[in-house]
Image (cartoon, rainbow, N blue to C red; front, side, top):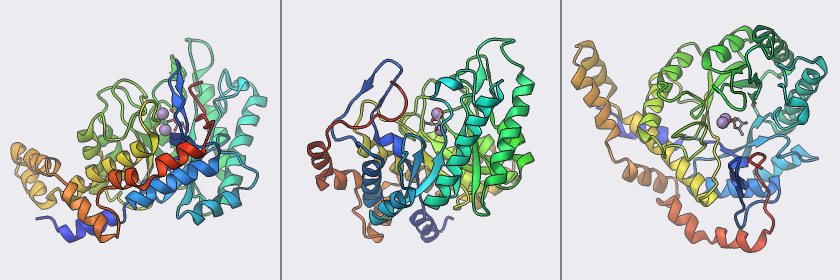
Length: 386
Ligand code: LRH
Ligand code: MN
Ligand code: MN
């Protein structure tokens, strides 16, 4: 039997970080679609993120991407966020949008380019000092397109050297989260293609280096929950970039393409003791054709629903069935939880928190969309896709 009161208490603590870039205009490599009312500044992105938190009660932090969110005064930006009831979260580095990075950043064959990239990462730690952020999220677009183009192994050495320098700069309460992605933009070899590579680097660096799992960064058919279970077992899961995919790194709404996979991942999180602030639950998505703020509210709700189902798994019954080798009973226990309609439970949780039980409706009725559509002209483009 699952303890419903405990499930509700756990759900009330859930925090999903939303990405500043998801509030900006985005698109594909073919076209960026401008939407009305889109933020023109980092401050306005945070205003939108605050709305997501206001209606879900579960999105208290916003991740920044530097330089997309570069400002003169980061402490003032943090104060702006706090004034709106949210905080600044992970600082995401960007070493992929500069001509100098054509052949890579921290793995580039030229020392001068590597220096520039590492300096940017160090600048991101300065930003963290000012914002009070705990996590530096690193994703490297580094790789090669053709066999022989560069020395794959030497690139690993350069990567290790860069990471070590940044690691040494971290404060006592700061961490680096290393993100992997199996391909794109490089098509032959990628320097951090998988969790094994990220894990090996993080292990060598030390406890402040952790792996981040972006759910869109795996080959089709990859068992992501196995990766989650393994990283938790090794104390190396730093967080998630949630989004969903049908084909590649689609960055669609979390839980939209495969809610069952999200449930399986959240079950391993719960099972592995990962439902704690030590694991950062972040979204990394873009909303090219749908309204952004409600899409992000929907995504937060999808994560909450998967979590609620994971928490509802009757772990005793599951363990008993597993121990008895009763395949069908064990699978049945898991599916019972997955097939539970948790929406009434989450509505209750929201009411108990003093929130509207229907975040989507509450946002619609709030008039915020109309307000920003009238007030903001010339919204900013999220950093990529031009
Ligand atoms: C790379 C990635 C990474 C970036 C973000 C914009 O595909 O997932 O996390 O910082 O997209
Ligand atoms: Mn990501
Ligand atoms: Mn991605």
